[in-house]
Image 1 (cartoon, rainbow, N blue to C red):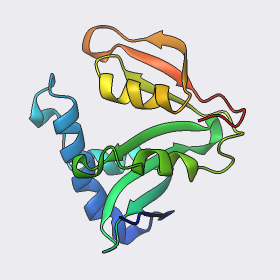
Image 2: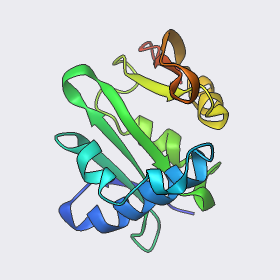
Image 3: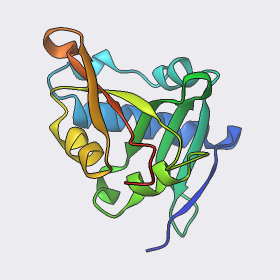
Image 4: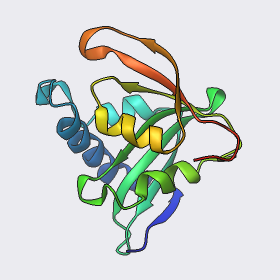
Length: 147
């Protein structure tokens, strides 16, 4: 298994849209599937910098989206078939300045798998917000070389 991380290109958009839609429907099972649409990807990653994880056949298997002005990780998704293989960690390590730069993100409280992943990558809770199904934890990377 070889994974390559590279900057996203316009040609990646169809595959990333599909990955984004599929991953959100698989992850956020407490929300109706029709709450998610292919067009969400374009709206939610506008003006963000994206990196793509691709397999040996150059198929996207994950991506990370960063809002650079605030070092905010807006999205990190990995195809279910590739979870547990280091793809998410490789995407984090591709961020400019990782691990010395402090990155922040929001993770829904109900997304226990993601919270476990971020904890294993040395993110710590720095705040909370939202209510009910929209409750989230604000997490930050340690920015000291850990993770």
